[in-house]
Image 1: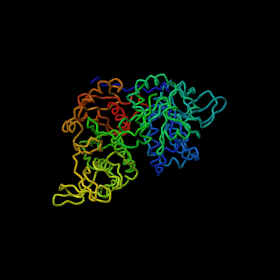
Image 2: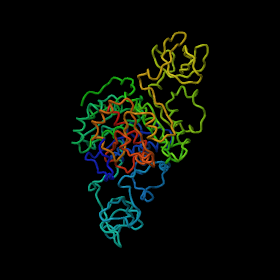
Image 3: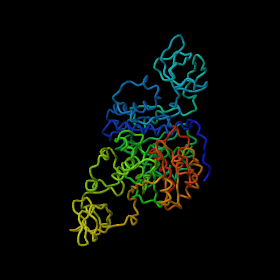
Image 4: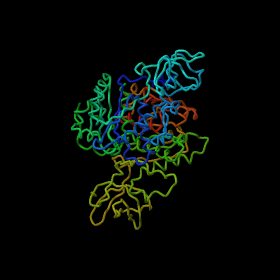
Length: 294
Length: 294
């Protein structure tokens, strides 16, 4: 059946939909120990990287409670995962919330893959780095090769940026890149908000919202329409519910029905063999399907 | 877009393909602690239940090593998960391998959902139970309602069976069912083998083998042919590789190419945003896609 490709797949590009997912602050509330909380949040991070999600939004699903602590834990672990290993020592402070990040598998996304050897650097390469010094219109950027890169720009110390190497002789020089100039998938941003789901969705603005629900239309039935909408979208959102409340209940508290909120409400797992699919499982299953839309 | 169904989805039925997955004995070899090993194996169990897998085969991926211990750990945890909660005390012996099963989410598959109240029993219901006594052509079966069920058959003590209730008066009576008579998805079997992948595949006999590889044909390209083969299949297998070796390397040790082994070799995650997708992630992503084939 067909031919198997033996050439290495090329570097993955960003999606044209600039895909965001939204997860509730209470996503690990049913998990007692920080160790498993870390693992589950890690699965969201892994799924986001595998399926090239650009933004993970943490929303408030219990607006009558202060969810700062829960949201902060989820955000801290996800942000940690997205930082290339060689920058973590410089960027991450000691934090009890991160006690178990050692159990997390690395992401190995394009912005993480990195040779420590100077001799493997090439002009034109993109690298993430951290500003270690800045004066007189110049900054030094640590990109993890033992020797800093010089850029002709004054920038705040400890800032994390992406540079493009412009020369690799005696001195390493580079220019700072704006994320929007990078076509390669370059990791995810983490956004924390105290807003409830529908309100934040409106505020950020999306041209396509795809909700998942076992009571929704079967994915196989809406696939053609979904594909058209997906291809047209410039900014798509896939929101997920919490361990104790589905999207339906979460939206109801804002006085909304699923159909008013979403362009599509889809049952991504027709005939599921269990009564409840967990949020982290729904993330994998849904993104796997949406990924095949292109 | 479409109507949202408000009626509860019906009980999931077995697949017409009698789907099996094969995982290597070394599936958690890269995970140092039993606690995370347990969690990962748990994810395989969860994915199998969600997507109605009927058989999980653990194969030997390092034929020069004795993998009994690794295979036994994977099998013990998966078998534990598939046992309804109310039968675990009777069926599961104390086992250090199961030290962390408390962190696993329950499956809540149809054969696990169960009311403890006698008054909710109905004639015709299916229940899993354990033989607690047997003599003179009768057996007593504990189905977790406080009062045993009588079946007119002599069976080995401690055996786990499925019964169909035939009367629920003063006495509870039932008949033993053969698994093949049950149309509802009724959990997974776990098969451990010392055989390498291709050999065991041949021995068991499958009419469809779907391998996953990032060098395979893109799922979107082969979807129509795959759907035809899937619908025709009576016994399908989806094998997965290990943390250190892809299917390609595993089959090469048996002198086989992917294309000789599989009817389909498919890249289930086009343009993956990470260098390596882990086995448990591949299981979720692949089964999610195959599930939409019907």
